Image (cartoon, rainbow, N blue to C red; front, side, top):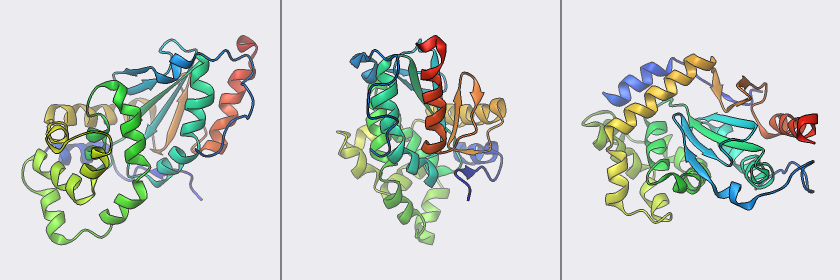
Length: 243
C-alpha cells in the first residue's frame, strides 16, 4: 500500500484555477548531541517554506507536504513531534516544511497556516493538520451550493467560503486569530500566487511525485512515513562527522 499521496495532475493546473506525539526516535539522548533548547523554538521563513531549528544545521531535513494528504496528517501525528523534540534541539538538524498545492482546500489551509509572523507557523500548522480528519470529512460531503461558493467569485470570497464551511475560523480562533485577521490572510492574492508558484517550482526542481516527500542534504529520500524516515536521521547522527 502506498505510503504517500500521489500527485494526480500537474500542479500548474491547480495553481492556475486557484489564482483565477507518536513514535520517537530514541528514548535517550541522541549520539553526540548537545541540546540547545533555543534551537527548538527558532523559526525562519525561507523562500520555500518555514524552517524550524538552526538555519546553519549540517542536516537539513525538508518535508514537502499537502494539507489534504492523509499520509501527511499521519506523519504529523507520528514523526513531527519526534523530529522537533529529539533532533532539532541538537542544532545539528533543521526541519523545513514546504507546501505542495493540490487543490483549493490546500491553498486555503496554507494561507491560514502562514498567517502572522513566522514564529506562529509551527503552532498554526499543528492545529490545522491535526484536525485533518474532521475538516476533510466535511469536505467530502459538501453540497452543490457550497461547491459553487468554492468555485465562483473572487479568489478571496472562495477562500473565505472554504474556511467557513470547513471550520478553519474556529480552528484559528483557538490560536488567537479573530475573523478579520484571518480574512486578511485568506484574501491575500499575492501571497496565494507566491505559494502556488513555489509549489510548482518545487515539483519541477525535485521531480516530486507525491506527499509527503522528504529531502535531506539536497537528496530526495526513499521514505514517505516516520518508520522509513527515522533510520535516515539516526544514520546521520551515527556518521563520523557527528561524533
